[in-house]
Image (cartoon, rainbow, N blue to C red):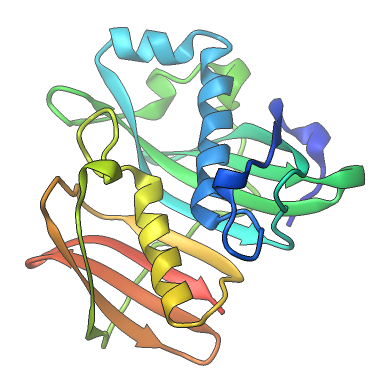
Length: 240
């Protein structure tokens, strides 16, 4: 987990609020992911990149997200979150995150993989055609990349989720951090703590969908697959 904050391009300081913590007083994983993505949008908007994409009918879709955590901050703690574009490989653009706490202590890091789509046709656009080099350093490569999951022999769980209005984003799709909340809730209900989390986003979910969970428990990890009918919508690998 890198702690070289000087290699990042943008940062913002946050104070952890009471509404962001779990019963132990620690930042929820869902809220950690929210903070990472808030910094990503602030970075993009700092150069009007978000507005320019919207005007061009283009949109980012999160494909993979991996978060590693050394220590979650508590209610009232101040943290600084750093982000940077980490180049392109094939159709994927990468963005890295770093959260530092008191005296520059590394708390958490994240790597995300994104696809750029035409918001009307949903066709994939080569990211280097739209990425400004001063924000994303197209020719660089990330130090680590969240891997594609290849899960087998999972068994259907009694746990399932019905998509509610509070799960939705501005596009009327399930917000990508809602999937992380579903996984976090499941882990807490099973009495398991998350050491690291990797999630692959496979297909869209909509209001009213019934998402069934398929599970495989290994010694040091839990594998979760979410399906709506026969459609696979997300997969997660959680280190425990």
